[in-house]
Amino acid sequence: MSDRLKSVLFAAALCLVCSIILTTASTGLNRFQQKNMRIDKHRNILRSVGLVEEGGRVAADAVEALYAEYIVTRWVDPSGRLIKDSERGETDLPLYVYMKEGDIEAYIVPFNSRGLWGRIHGYLAIDNDGSTITGFTVFKHSETPGLGGEIERAWFQKNWVGKKIVDYGGEFVSVGIAKGAVKDTVPPEEQSHYVDGISGATMTGKYLTSGLKETLENYEPVSIRFRKNLVHEAAGEGRDAE
Image 1 (cartoon, rainbow, N blue to C red):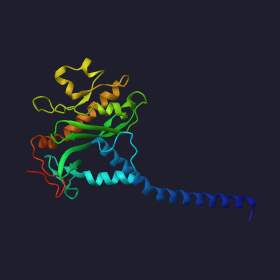
Image 2: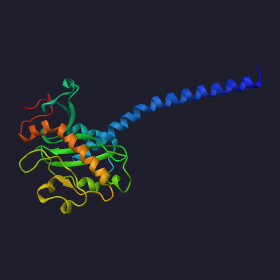
Image 3: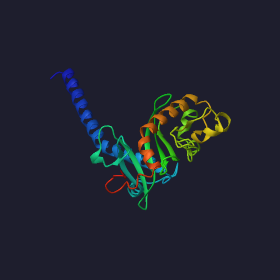
Image 4: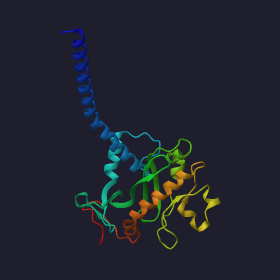
């Protein structure tokens, strides 16, 4: 066997061995990656309702225990009824319900909005009155650090608490980000629907405002049911009042 052929065979064998090692490692790590993604999702849902503090270190086991104790996953059909996973259809939307001592404290809707440089992913928690925001969190985005990237900061996310998605007459108006300070740029009668904008991040605010409105419009049927006090139970069978 010539030296050249030996070199080719050695290179081929080495490539094969490396390929097998990489494939095995990727397959083995995938399970851990999926677990970490699930825990991160649960941590952000808990953060949106204040069960995990922003920036606080909470072990994975503690996150899973809190999630199992307080959060119930349901789906919303086009009429706004809460249904179980086994009953959901293609047009139904996911909903995360915050339960405490058997009562619904709030419900959490996921959003996936356009941003300036990519998608913005997060959760918006709404009180059981169907009108008042109780939490807001962003966990994945591609916005510019120091500018649009401020949407992930605690100071910005806290500004959403207490804002309303309906006007004084109870009609849906959504909630959004002002172009500057709310007190300086928004009429008094509309200030409860806006948070202060981020300096130098006008487009991020514009896109996120639009994305949140689209999301909240999709969830408006279930929000209406909460406003009318028609949702009494979310655990158990997962059916609310007709």
